[in-house]
Length: 247
Figure 1: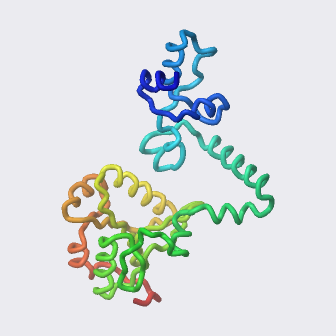
Figure 2 (figure 1 turned 60 degrees about the vertical axis):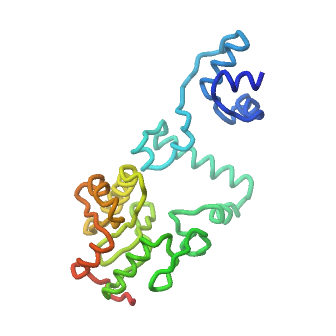
Figure 3 (figure 1 turned 45 degrees about the vertical axis):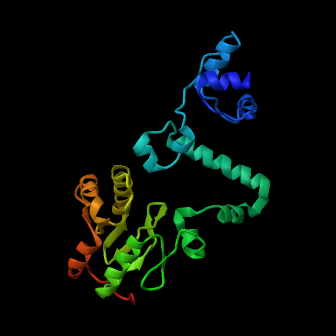
């Protein structure tokens, strides 16, 4: 029966998945439900109350994802979900749940910044920073060589969130990207810049990318400037210093 449903529905699922569906722990794909009804020559006991996207689990959280894809969750359902999560941790770990929460979370990437345990950080910056790739390192080297006082991955409070851009120089926020899907990444960056602007209206923004992607990001970022490392070097005199920072 299992193999027949998998073949007929075109949906792959584990042998244990139906048990989770029966318990209400997971949602079954609508194609599988229809196939089971056809194979067993029966009808669903009740009509579907809602039909979710097959990737609803990946899309249910995050303001940026909501803007990109839409979401069936409201602010109220998110709040209730957070309260249930807190209650479950409190029941399991008692008053020490907050310590456990801190240990398993990576809030805004801040835990990565403090522990330096992220194995993807293999590139060394001019001030000994561990960076993700050579684009970040080249940007840092350009700023450093120009005598510019920059901060790498500073924490910026935006509302009730802490955001971490790649660089800040004075009131200029710099993000480095060579993500192939420029349209999607541009949407993410614009949303991030918008959140920062709400609490820091004086901040300006700049995107640094590789030459082959410059035109793509220039189209996606709209009024926000897009440049390359070489372009950054040529305009370093326009970048203000941060008083009190040392190279």
